[in-house]
Length: 139
Image 1 (cartoon, rainbow, N blue to C red):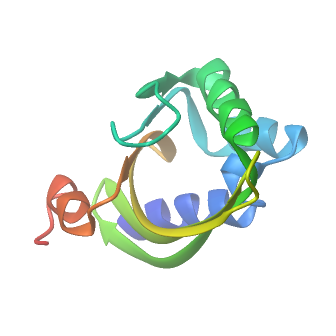
Image 2: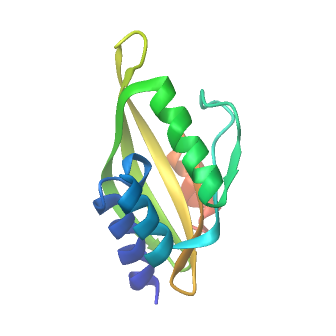
Image 3: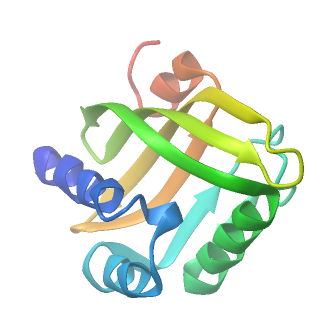
């Protein structure tokens, strides 16, 4: 079952990076992969301010905030790690400031929780060891 979870999460990144999805991809993500109460949890040090976004409305709000903050941005995935009902994704944020145009590149780790073939949440971490620990793996 957990390899299926990895494939669900991988599909979300492959559809144009869920956080940069077109409206059609966004609808498909909720139809095919995401629970309607899907929750996105941001670390407190992220510039977006709000820490938890819920459901379609919350995901759309976060995506709009990211587009307001960053002129360009994407996640470049490096590795998917199977952790039973969690999938850990090592990634890099590649972005340019919206106003400044200054490029940035940062490591990030996403811990997805998948239940009954639906992603129910994703938690973003800056520290990979902390993310691995949260997923029940050793850092």
